[in-house]
Image (cartoon, rainbow, N blue to C red):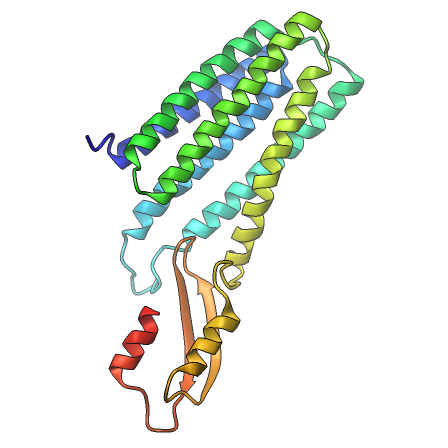
Length: 263
């Protein structure tokens, strides 16, 4: 079979992740577990990423207008930048709270902590399977599927921490696990922040080499010089280029320009 339709898979995965975030926020507060709050931050990153992906699909289908001649693709860049900033602030607050816990230990309820982690593992596994079935051959959906699988693995870590706390009563385990989870989030978020800020400030997209592109343009028969080469991202997936090609022989034919555009 074709599996769950992509839009349905995204919606169900999003609903499950929102449920996980709410559950971990409530019971993280009830159980006094910083590890649950950190895991909530990890799942929140996927909620924001899924929302950005869904919005990008909708906006990408909208045609340009007289006022928005390039369309709405750039909103995907702004969504990614917003995503990164929110995650950095959230993760920073979690790390700050965890460090304070080392100096002022708080008794954590390992039963509640472990139970919520177990539910999160199950829900993330379901979400991952939905996206795996619904997004065969789709790169963005496959990436989201891997994130869900990663979330399940992080929740396993929280579950193991709950078991260790129950057996050893060591208060330091909870903040230590929350810091490890937060550092994992920060590594990915810093990369997202750097790339999204670069795109928002019209930098050349990371996967393109401007020197190589200029050399290619100069190598075209009939092109004597290249001026005003500009390359920027219109969205997180779509790049554009403008350039002035000097052709003293009287211009380039439509077939040559078509070939250049395709390259």
